[in-house]
Amino acid sequence: MEKNTVFSQYAIYLMGQNMSDIWTIKDVASYLKLTEKTAYRLVAEGEIPGFKVGGSWRFSKDEVEKWVTEQAKKNKKFLRESPK
Image (cartoon, rainbow, N blue to C red; front, side, top):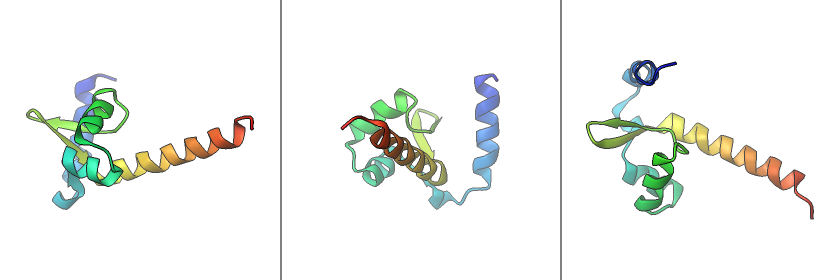
């Protein structure tokens, strides 16, 4: 799927979001208890789901919360499978 198509689908999804459900990089960094620099790096690496509006990153609260849940599940699985 092309990048523009993915962005368009994501933009349509976000139209149904409340504006308070759209976060800035500062909001995401605070929520995840990271520095803004670390949050920028993770977003640039594609780790944290987000999108750009102009030159600024924006995030769906729901998508970030889903990502956190997925990361927690991955970590639990890793901890169960790692040798002691």
